[in-house]
Image (cartoon, rainbow, N blue to C red; front, top):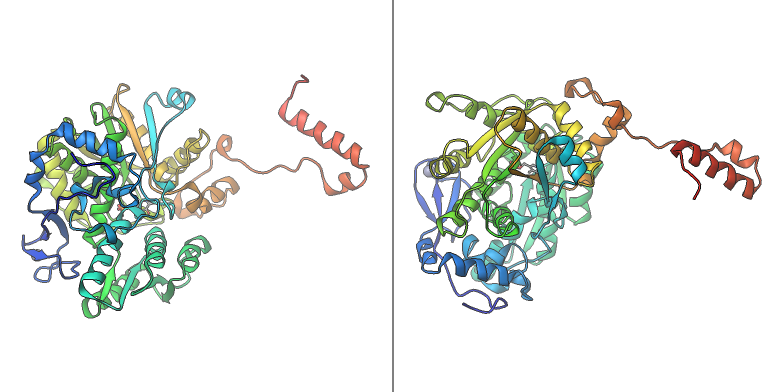
Length: 482
Ligand SMILES: *Cc1c(COP(=O)(O)O)cnc(C)c1O
Ligand SMILES: [Zn+2]
Protein backbone atom coordinates (compact mmCIF):
# COMPACT_ATOMS: atom_id res chain seq x y z
CA UNK A 1 0.00 0.00 0.00
CA UNK A 2 1.43 3.35 -1.02
CA UNK A 3 2.03 6.31 1.30
CA UNK A 4 -1.07 8.49 1.62
CA UNK A 5 0.80 11.50 0.22
CA UNK A 6 1.87 9.60 -2.89
CA UNK A 7 -0.19 10.14 -5.98
CA UNK A 8 -1.80 6.83 -7.00
CA UNK A 9 -0.17 4.66 -9.64
CA UNK A 10 -3.38 3.09 -10.94
CA UNK A 11 -4.64 4.37 -14.28
CA UNK A 12 -8.02 3.29 -15.60
CA UNK A 13 -9.37 3.17 -19.10
CA UNK A 14 -12.29 5.54 -19.18
CA UNK A 15 -14.82 5.67 -22.00
CA UNK A 16 -18.08 7.45 -22.61
CA UNK A 17 -20.92 4.92 -22.61
CA UNK A 18 -24.12 6.06 -24.32
CA UNK A 19 -27.20 5.13 -22.28
CA UNK A 20 -29.35 5.30 -25.41
CA UNK A 21 -27.67 3.04 -27.96
CA UNK A 22 -24.79 1.58 -25.96
CA UNK A 23 -22.10 3.07 -28.21
CA UNK A 24 -18.74 3.84 -26.63
CA UNK A 25 -16.53 6.83 -27.34
CA UNK A 26 -12.97 7.76 -26.57
CA UNK A 27 -12.45 10.48 -23.94
CA UNK A 28 -9.88 12.21 -26.15
CA UNK A 29 -12.69 14.31 -27.62
CA UNK A 30 -15.13 16.56 -25.80
CA UNK A 31 -18.50 14.81 -25.96
CA UNK A 32 -21.71 15.69 -24.18
CA UNK A 33 -24.39 13.66 -25.92
CA UNK A 34 -24.11 10.69 -28.22
CA UNK A 35 -23.24 11.79 -31.78
CA UNK A 36 -25.32 8.93 -33.14
CA UNK A 37 -28.47 8.87 -30.96
CA UNK A 38 -28.35 12.06 -28.86
CA UNK A 39 -28.66 10.33 -25.48
CA UNK A 40 -26.57 11.16 -22.40
CA UNK A 41 -23.35 9.42 -21.38
CA UNK A 42 -21.90 7.91 -18.27
CA UNK A 43 -18.17 7.42 -17.93
CA UNK A 44 -17.11 3.83 -17.34
CA UNK A 45 -13.72 2.46 -16.37
CA UNK A 46 -13.04 -0.64 -18.47
CA UNK A 47 -10.36 -1.83 -16.08
CA UNK A 48 -12.44 -1.33 -12.91
CA UNK A 49 -12.16 -5.06 -12.11
CA UNK A 50 -8.44 -4.62 -11.49
CA UNK A 51 -9.37 -2.64 -8.41
CA UNK A 52 -10.82 -5.84 -6.97
CA UNK A 53 -7.28 -7.20 -6.58
CA UNK A 54 -6.98 -4.85 -3.64
CA UNK A 55 -9.03 -6.06 -0.69
CA UNK A 56 -11.90 -4.06 0.73
CA UNK A 57 -9.99 -3.68 4.00
CA UNK A 58 -7.00 -2.27 2.14
CA UNK A 59 -9.15 0.26 0.32
CA UNK A 60 -10.72 1.40 3.57
CA UNK A 61 -7.32 1.79 5.16
CA UNK A 62 -5.92 3.68 2.18
CA UNK A 63 -8.85 6.12 2.02
CA UNK A 64 -8.73 6.62 5.77
CA UNK A 65 -5.00 7.34 5.63
CA UNK A 66 -5.48 9.69 2.72
CA UNK A 67 -7.91 11.66 4.86
CA UNK A 68 -4.75 13.01 6.53
CA UNK A 69 -2.75 13.52 3.34
CA UNK A 70 -0.65 16.63 2.84
CA UNK A 71 -0.87 16.34 -0.94
CA UNK A 72 -3.36 18.96 -2.21
CA UNK A 73 -4.24 16.78 -5.21
CA UNK A 74 -5.63 14.17 -2.79
CA UNK A 75 -7.13 16.43 -0.17
CA UNK A 76 -10.50 17.01 -1.79
CA UNK A 77 -12.72 14.81 -3.92
CA UNK A 78 -9.70 12.99 -5.34
CA UNK A 79 -9.08 11.23 -2.06
CA UNK A 80 -11.07 8.59 -3.93
CA UNK A 81 -9.06 8.99 -7.14
CA UNK A 82 -9.11 5.33 -8.21
CA UNK A 83 -12.90 5.21 -8.05
CA UNK A 84 -13.51 8.46 -9.84
CA UNK A 85 -11.34 9.78 -12.64
CA UNK A 86 -8.17 7.65 -12.65
CA UNK A 87 -6.96 9.09 -15.94
CA UNK A 88 -5.91 12.43 -14.53
CA UNK A 89 -2.31 13.30 -13.75
CA UNK A 90 -1.39 14.96 -10.48
CA UNK A 91 -0.39 18.21 -12.17
CA UNK A 92 -3.86 18.64 -13.66
CA UNK A 93 -5.82 18.17 -10.47
CA UNK A 94 -7.52 21.22 -9.07
CA UNK A 95 -8.21 21.70 -5.41
CA UNK A 96 -10.17 24.74 -4.30
CA UNK A 97 -11.26 23.26 -1.00
CA UNK A 98 -14.21 21.27 -2.30
CA UNK A 99 -15.45 18.09 -0.67
CA UNK A 100 -14.96 16.85 2.88
CA UNK A 101 -18.17 18.48 3.97
CA UNK A 102 -19.33 17.51 7.45
CA UNK A 103 -22.36 15.50 8.41
CA UNK A 104 -23.97 17.27 11.33
CA UNK A 105 -26.45 15.39 13.50
CA UNK A 106 -29.67 17.22 14.16
CA UNK A 107 -29.69 18.36 17.78
CA UNK A 108 -31.72 16.32 20.28
CA UNK A 109 -34.56 18.86 20.34
CA UNK A 110 -35.16 18.52 16.62
CA UNK A 111 -34.82 14.74 16.65
CA UNK A 112 -37.36 14.61 19.47
CA UNK A 113 -39.86 16.80 17.60
CA UNK A 114 -39.43 14.82 14.39
CA UNK A 115 -39.39 11.38 15.98
CA UNK A 116 -36.58 10.36 13.61
CA UNK A 117 -32.80 10.60 13.63
CA UNK A 118 -31.78 13.14 11.02
CA UNK A 119 -28.42 14.62 10.07
CA UNK A 120 -27.41 17.09 7.37
CA UNK A 121 -24.45 16.74 5.08
CA UNK A 122 -23.59 20.39 4.56
CA UNK A 123 -22.65 20.62 0.92
CA UNK A 124 -23.14 24.36 1.15
CA UNK A 125 -19.71 24.39 2.79
CA UNK A 126 -18.09 23.93 -0.62
CA UNK A 127 -16.15 26.91 -2.08
CA UNK A 128 -18.96 28.36 -4.20
CA UNK A 129 -21.44 27.24 -1.54
CA UNK A 130 -23.09 24.35 -3.36
CA UNK A 131 -22.34 20.72 -4.26
CA UNK A 132 -21.79 21.77 -7.89
CA UNK A 133 -18.14 22.35 -6.95
CA UNK A 134 -17.60 18.60 -6.65
CA UNK A 135 -18.46 18.10 -10.30
CA UNK A 136 -16.64 21.22 -11.47
CA UNK A 137 -13.41 20.18 -9.74
CA UNK A 138 -13.50 16.99 -11.77
CA UNK A 139 -14.66 18.53 -15.07
CA UNK A 140 -12.08 21.33 -14.92
CA UNK A 141 -9.27 18.96 -13.93
CA UNK A 142 -10.10 16.93 -17.03
CA UNK A 143 -10.23 20.10 -19.11
CA UNK A 144 -6.79 21.06 -17.81
CA UNK A 145 -5.46 17.68 -18.88
CA UNK A 146 -6.88 18.17 -22.39
CA UNK A 147 -5.38 21.64 -22.65
CA UNK A 148 -2.00 20.32 -21.58
CA UNK A 149 -1.88 17.19 -23.71
CA UNK A 150 -3.41 18.74 -26.83
CA UNK A 151 -1.64 22.06 -26.55
CA UNK A 152 -4.86 24.02 -26.83
CA UNK A 153 -4.40 27.76 -26.52
CA UNK A 154 -8.06 28.56 -26.14
CA UNK A 155 -11.21 26.85 -24.96
CA UNK A 156 -14.45 28.42 -23.85
CA UNK A 157 -15.92 27.11 -20.59
CA UNK A 158 -19.60 27.84 -20.81
CA UNK A 159 -22.87 26.97 -19.17
CA UNK A 160 -26.47 28.07 -19.18
CA UNK A 161 -27.65 28.34 -15.64
CA UNK A 162 -29.47 30.75 -13.44
CA UNK A 163 -27.73 29.67 -10.32
CA UNK A 164 -25.28 27.35 -8.71
CA UNK A 165 -23.86 25.81 -11.90
CA UNK A 166 -22.73 29.14 -13.27
CA UNK A 167 -21.37 30.20 -9.88
CA UNK A 168 -19.28 27.04 -9.67
CA UNK A 169 -18.20 27.03 -13.34
CA UNK A 170 -17.15 30.68 -13.18
CA UNK A 171 -15.19 30.06 -9.98
CA UNK A 172 -13.17 27.14 -11.35
CA UNK A 173 -12.68 28.81 -14.74
CA UNK A 174 -11.29 31.92 -13.10
CA UNK A 175 -8.89 29.81 -11.04
CA UNK A 176 -7.57 27.91 -14.05
CA UNK A 177 -7.33 30.99 -16.27
CA UNK A 178 -4.82 30.77 -19.13
CA UNK A 179 -6.41 29.09 -22.12
CA UNK A 180 -9.78 28.94 -20.40
CA UNK A 181 -12.24 31.69 -21.27
CA UNK A 182 -15.35 31.73 -19.16
CA UNK A 183 -18.89 32.70 -20.06
CA UNK A 184 -22.35 32.06 -18.69
CA UNK A 185 -25.58 32.58 -20.56
CA UNK A 186 -28.59 33.70 -18.56
CA UNK A 187 -32.19 34.64 -19.29
CA UNK A 188 -32.36 38.45 -19.20
CA UNK A 189 -34.32 39.87 -16.30
CA UNK A 190 -35.01 36.47 -14.74
CA UNK A 191 -32.03 36.33 -12.46
CA UNK A 192 -31.72 37.70 -8.94
CA UNK A 193 -28.82 39.90 -7.80
CA UNK A 194 -27.55 36.98 -5.66
CA UNK A 195 -27.47 34.72 -8.71
CA UNK A 196 -25.54 37.28 -10.75
CA UNK A 197 -23.11 38.09 -7.99
CA UNK A 198 -20.94 34.98 -8.16
CA UNK A 199 -20.27 34.72 -11.92
CA UNK A 200 -19.77 38.49 -12.15
CA UNK A 201 -17.44 38.42 -9.18
CA UNK A 202 -15.40 35.62 -10.69
CA UNK A 203 -14.97 37.68 -13.84
CA UNK A 204 -16.99 35.49 -16.20
CA UNK A 205 -18.45 37.11 -19.30
CA UNK A 206 -22.15 37.16 -18.40
CA UNK A 207 -24.33 37.11 -21.50
CA UNK A 208 -28.08 37.50 -21.43
CA UNK A 209 -30.73 36.43 -23.91
CA UNK A 210 -34.44 37.12 -23.77
CA UNK A 211 -36.62 34.21 -22.74
CA UNK A 212 -36.20 31.39 -20.29
CA UNK A 213 -33.54 28.91 -19.31
CA UNK A 214 -34.26 26.65 -22.30
CA UNK A 215 -33.51 29.48 -24.73
CA UNK A 216 -30.09 29.83 -23.10
CA UNK A 217 -29.47 26.10 -23.18
CA UNK A 218 -30.13 25.89 -26.92
CA UNK A 219 -27.53 28.58 -27.64
CA UNK A 220 -24.98 26.83 -25.44
CA UNK A 221 -25.59 23.49 -27.14
CA UNK A 222 -25.24 25.01 -30.58
CA UNK A 223 -21.90 26.47 -29.51
CA UNK A 224 -20.76 23.13 -28.09
CA UNK A 225 -21.66 21.37 -31.34
CA UNK A 226 -19.73 23.79 -33.53
CA UNK A 227 -16.87 25.31 -31.55
CA UNK A 228 -14.21 24.27 -29.06
CA UNK A 229 -16.38 24.63 -26.04
CA UNK A 230 -16.38 22.92 -22.67
CA UNK A 231 -20.04 22.65 -21.79
CA UNK A 232 -20.45 22.57 -18.04
CA UNK A 233 -24.11 21.82 -17.65
CA UNK A 234 -24.98 18.42 -16.27
CA UNK A 235 -24.79 16.75 -19.69
CA UNK A 236 -21.10 16.80 -18.93
CA UNK A 237 -20.40 13.30 -17.62
CA UNK A 238 -17.23 14.43 -15.80
CA UNK A 239 -19.38 16.40 -13.42
CA UNK A 240 -21.29 13.27 -12.47
CA UNK A 241 -18.02 11.50 -11.66
CA UNK A 242 -16.89 14.28 -9.36
CA UNK A 243 -20.23 14.28 -7.60
CA UNK A 244 -19.82 10.60 -6.73
CA UNK A 245 -17.47 11.85 -4.01
CA UNK A 246 -20.57 12.71 -1.97
CA UNK A 247 -21.35 9.01 -1.63
CA UNK A 248 -17.74 8.08 -0.85
CA UNK A 249 -17.49 10.71 1.86
CA UNK A 250 -20.81 9.71 3.39
CA UNK A 251 -19.75 6.08 3.63
CA UNK A 252 -16.38 7.05 5.10
CA UNK A 253 -18.04 9.35 7.65
CA UNK A 254 -19.93 6.34 9.02
CA UNK A 255 -16.80 4.19 8.98
CA UNK A 256 -17.97 2.36 5.85
CA UNK A 257 -21.02 0.94 7.62
CA UNK A 258 -24.18 1.92 5.80
CA UNK A 259 -26.58 -0.35 7.67
CA UNK A 260 -29.65 1.60 8.77
CA UNK A 261 -28.71 4.68 6.74
CA UNK A 262 -31.12 6.46 4.41
CA UNK A 263 -29.76 9.15 2.12
CA UNK A 264 -32.18 11.91 1.02
CA UNK A 265 -31.36 13.91 -2.11
CA UNK A 266 -33.37 16.61 -3.92
CA UNK A 267 -33.89 15.89 -7.62
CA UNK A 268 -33.71 18.61 -10.28
CA UNK A 269 -31.82 17.64 -13.41
CA UNK A 270 -31.12 14.40 -11.54
CA UNK A 271 -27.34 14.51 -11.91
CA UNK A 272 -26.67 14.47 -8.20
CA UNK A 273 -28.86 11.49 -7.34
CA UNK A 274 -27.34 9.65 -10.30
CA UNK A 275 -23.85 10.30 -8.99
CA UNK A 276 -24.74 9.33 -5.43
CA UNK A 277 -26.27 6.01 -6.47
CA UNK A 278 -23.38 5.37 -8.84
CA UNK A 279 -20.88 6.09 -6.07
CA UNK A 280 -22.48 3.76 -3.54
CA UNK A 281 -22.68 1.03 -6.19
CA UNK A 282 -18.94 1.30 -6.84
CA UNK A 283 -18.16 1.02 -3.13
CA UNK A 284 -20.43 -1.97 -2.89
CA UNK A 285 -18.90 -3.67 -5.89
CA UNK A 286 -15.47 -3.46 -4.30
CA UNK A 287 -16.85 -4.65 -0.95
CA UNK A 288 -15.81 -1.37 0.69
CA UNK A 289 -19.37 -1.14 1.98
CA UNK A 290 -21.31 -4.33 2.59
CA UNK A 291 -24.76 -2.75 2.64
CA UNK A 292 -26.16 -0.19 0.24
CA UNK A 293 -27.79 2.70 2.06
CA UNK A 294 -31.35 3.34 0.98
CA UNK A 295 -31.63 6.33 -1.33
CA UNK A 296 -34.66 8.65 -1.39
CA UNK A 297 -35.05 11.25 -4.10
CA UNK A 298 -37.28 14.19 -3.17
CA UNK A 299 -39.29 16.41 -5.52
CA UNK A 300 -41.72 19.28 -5.07
CA UNK A 301 -45.27 18.79 -6.32
CA UNK A 302 -44.50 21.77 -8.58
CA UNK A 303 -41.74 19.90 -10.46
CA UNK A 304 -42.07 16.16 -10.00
CA UNK A 305 -41.49 14.18 -13.23
CA UNK A 306 -39.21 11.63 -11.56
CA UNK A 307 -41.63 11.13 -8.67
CA UNK A 308 -44.45 10.52 -11.15
CA UNK A 309 -42.41 7.99 -13.07
CA UNK A 310 -41.59 5.89 -10.01
CA UNK A 311 -45.07 6.30 -8.48
CA UNK A 312 -46.44 4.09 -11.26
CA UNK A 313 -46.22 0.29 -10.98
CA UNK A 314 -42.96 -1.10 -12.27
CA UNK A 315 -44.72 -2.64 -15.28
CA UNK A 316 -46.50 0.49 -16.46
CA UNK A 317 -43.92 3.22 -16.06
CA UNK A 318 -43.37 5.74 -18.80
CA UNK A 319 -41.53 9.00 -18.60
CA UNK A 320 -43.28 12.25 -19.43
CA UNK A 321 -41.87 15.75 -18.88
CA UNK A 322 -44.06 17.96 -16.70
CA UNK A 323 -44.81 21.68 -16.94
CA UNK A 324 -43.30 23.16 -13.80
CA UNK A 325 -44.82 25.87 -11.65
CA UNK A 326 -42.78 28.18 -9.42
CA UNK A 327 -40.92 26.37 -6.66
CA UNK A 328 -38.91 27.53 -3.68
CA UNK A 329 -36.62 24.58 -4.44
CA UNK A 330 -35.58 26.70 -7.39
CA UNK A 331 -32.42 24.74 -8.18
CA UNK A 332 -34.56 21.63 -8.60
CA UNK A 333 -37.39 23.23 -10.59
CA UNK A 334 -36.97 21.13 -13.71
CA UNK A 335 -39.70 19.43 -15.70
CA UNK A 336 -37.55 17.40 -18.07
CA UNK A 337 -34.40 16.29 -16.24
CA UNK A 338 -31.35 15.85 -18.44
CA UNK A 339 -30.11 12.94 -16.34
CA UNK A 340 -33.35 11.00 -16.13
CA UNK A 341 -31.93 8.14 -18.27
CA UNK A 342 -28.99 8.01 -15.87
CA UNK A 343 -31.35 7.70 -12.89
CA UNK A 344 -33.17 4.83 -14.55
CA UNK A 345 -29.86 3.15 -15.35
CA UNK A 346 -28.55 3.29 -11.78
CA UNK A 347 -31.90 2.80 -10.02
CA UNK A 348 -32.32 -0.52 -11.80
CA UNK A 349 -28.92 -1.73 -10.61
CA UNK A 350 -29.54 -0.29 -7.18
CA UNK A 351 -32.86 -2.09 -6.70
CA UNK A 352 -31.43 -5.33 -8.08
CA UNK A 353 -28.76 -5.30 -5.35
CA UNK A 354 -30.46 -3.44 -2.53
CA UNK A 355 -33.91 -4.93 -2.97
CA UNK A 356 -37.31 -3.29 -3.19
CA UNK A 357 -37.43 0.03 -1.36
CA UNK A 358 -33.70 0.67 -1.73
CA UNK A 359 -34.46 3.51 -4.16
CA UNK A 360 -37.60 5.60 -3.87
CA UNK A 361 -38.85 9.04 -4.77
CA UNK A 362 -40.94 11.13 -2.38
CA UNK A 363 -43.16 14.07 -3.27
CA UNK A 364 -43.54 17.07 -0.95
CA UNK A 365 -45.38 20.39 -1.07
CA UNK A 366 -43.93 23.88 -1.31
CA UNK A 367 -45.39 24.61 2.12
CA UNK A 368 -43.63 21.59 3.63
CA UNK A 369 -40.33 22.59 2.02
CA UNK A 370 -40.41 26.11 3.46
CA UNK A 371 -41.61 25.05 6.91
CA UNK A 372 -38.94 22.36 7.04
CA UNK A 373 -36.09 24.61 5.92
CA UNK A 374 -36.94 27.16 8.58
CA UNK A 375 -37.40 24.47 11.21
CA UNK A 376 -33.99 22.96 10.35
CA UNK A 377 -32.21 26.30 10.48
CA UNK A 378 -33.82 27.15 13.79
CA UNK A 379 -31.96 24.10 15.07
CA UNK A 380 -28.47 25.03 13.99
CA UNK A 381 -28.53 23.70 10.44
CA UNK A 382 -27.63 25.78 7.38
CA UNK A 383 -30.02 24.30 4.86
CA UNK A 384 -31.05 25.91 1.59
CA UNK A 385 -34.55 25.38 0.25
CA UNK A 386 -33.46 22.11 -1.39
CA UNK A 387 -32.13 21.05 1.99
CA UNK A 388 -35.54 21.90 3.41
CA UNK A 389 -37.00 19.72 0.68
CA UNK A 390 -34.95 16.80 2.01
CA UNK A 391 -36.24 17.27 5.55
CA UNK A 392 -39.78 17.53 4.20
CA UNK A 393 -39.11 14.28 2.34
CA UNK A 394 -37.86 12.62 5.50
CA UNK A 395 -41.00 13.57 7.39
CA UNK A 396 -43.17 12.36 4.54
CA UNK A 397 -41.26 9.06 4.39
CA UNK A 398 -41.94 8.55 8.09
CA UNK A 399 -45.62 9.36 7.57
CA UNK A 400 -45.78 6.80 4.76
CA UNK A 401 -44.09 4.19 6.93
CA UNK A 402 -41.10 3.99 4.57
CA UNK A 403 -38.49 4.70 7.24
CA UNK A 404 -38.23 3.70 10.86
CA UNK A 405 -37.13 5.47 14.01
CA UNK A 406 -34.11 3.18 14.17
CA UNK A 407 -32.67 4.42 10.90
CA UNK A 408 -30.46 7.49 10.41
CA UNK A 409 -31.68 9.85 7.72
CA UNK A 410 -28.84 11.75 6.05
CA UNK A 411 -30.21 14.85 4.36
CA UNK A 412 -28.41 16.69 1.59
CA UNK A 413 -28.18 20.44 2.17
CA UNK A 414 -27.10 20.96 -1.42
CA UNK A 415 -26.29 24.64 -1.02
CA UNK A 416 -25.67 27.10 1.77
CA UNK A 417 -28.69 28.67 3.38
CA UNK A 418 -27.54 32.15 2.30
CA UNK A 419 -27.81 31.37 -1.41
CA UNK A 420 -31.60 31.13 -1.31
CA UNK A 421 -32.23 33.81 1.24
CA UNK A 422 -34.96 35.47 -0.84
CA UNK A 423 -37.38 32.67 0.01
CA UNK A 424 -36.77 33.01 3.71
CA UNK A 425 -37.43 36.71 3.37
CA UNK A 426 -40.73 36.07 1.58
CA UNK A 427 -41.69 33.66 4.36
CA UNK A 428 -40.83 36.07 7.14
CA UNK A 429 -42.43 39.06 5.40
CA UNK A 430 -45.46 37.06 4.21
CA UNK A 431 -44.91 38.18 0.60
CA UNK A 432 -45.01 34.88 -1.28
CA UNK A 433 -46.66 35.24 -4.70
CA UNK A 434 -49.84 33.12 -4.72
CA UNK A 435 -48.51 30.57 -7.23
CA UNK A 436 -46.08 29.14 -4.66
CA UNK A 437 -48.95 28.29 -2.33
CA UNK A 438 -46.93 29.04 0.79
CA UNK A 439 -48.52 30.54 3.90
CA UNK A 440 -46.00 31.35 6.62
CA UNK A 441 -46.62 29.73 9.98
CA UNK A 442 -46.66 32.59 12.50
CA UNK A 443 -44.59 30.67 15.05
CA UNK A 444 -41.80 30.23 12.47
CA UNK A 445 -41.78 33.80 11.18
CA UNK A 446 -39.03 36.01 12.48
CA UNK A 447 -38.54 39.74 12.15
CA UNK A 448 -36.39 42.43 13.66
CA UNK A 449 -38.12 44.43 16.40
CA UNK A 450 -37.30 48.01 17.21
CA UNK A 451 -36.63 48.16 20.92
CA UNK A 452 -36.62 51.95 21.27
CA UNK A 453 -37.61 54.65 18.78
CA UNK A 454 -35.32 57.35 17.46
CA UNK A 455 -37.44 60.02 19.15
CA UNK A 456 -37.38 58.27 22.52
CA UNK A 457 -33.65 57.79 22.20
CA UNK A 458 -33.01 61.43 21.32
CA UNK A 459 -35.06 62.68 24.28
CA UNK A 460 -32.83 60.81 26.73
CA UNK A 461 -29.35 61.44 28.07
CA UNK A 462 -26.90 58.69 27.07
CA UNK A 463 -27.00 56.78 30.37
CA UNK A 464 -30.79 57.06 30.57
CA UNK A 465 -31.05 55.75 27.02
CA UNK A 466 -28.97 52.70 27.91
CA UNK A 467 -31.11 51.97 30.98
CA UNK A 468 -34.34 52.45 29.04
CA UNK A 469 -33.28 50.33 26.03
CA UNK A 470 -31.87 47.60 28.27
CA UNK A 471 -35.08 47.72 30.32
CA UNK A 472 -37.07 47.14 27.16
CA UNK A 473 -34.85 44.14 26.29
CA UNK A 474 -35.40 42.75 29.79
CA UNK A 475 -39.17 42.98 29.56
CA UNK A 476 -39.26 41.68 25.95
CA UNK A 477 -37.20 38.61 26.88
CA UNK A 478 -38.32 38.18 30.49
CA UNK A 479 -34.78 38.28 31.88
CA UNK A 480 -34.21 37.64 35.58
CA UNK A 481 -31.54 39.54 37.50
CA UNK A 482 -28.40 37.56 38.43
C1 LIG B 1 -28.24 21.76 -9.00
C2 LIG B 1 -28.87 21.78 -7.67
C3 LIG B 1 -29.85 20.85 -7.29
C4 LIG B 1 -30.37 19.80 -8.23
O1 LIG B 1 -29.41 18.84 -8.51
P1 LIG B 1 -29.54 17.93 -9.82
O2 LIG B 1 -28.24 17.28 -9.94
O3 LIG B 1 -29.85 18.86 -10.95
O4 LIG B 1 -30.67 17.00 -9.56
C5 LIG B 1 -30.32 20.88 -5.99
N1 LIG B 1 -29.90 21.80 -5.12
C6 LIG B 1 -28.99 22.73 -5.45
C7 LIG B 1 -28.59 23.74 -4.43
C8 LIG B 1 -28.44 22.75 -6.73
O5 LIG B 1 -27.54 23.68 -7.04
ZN1 LIG C 1 -26.15 6.67 -28.49
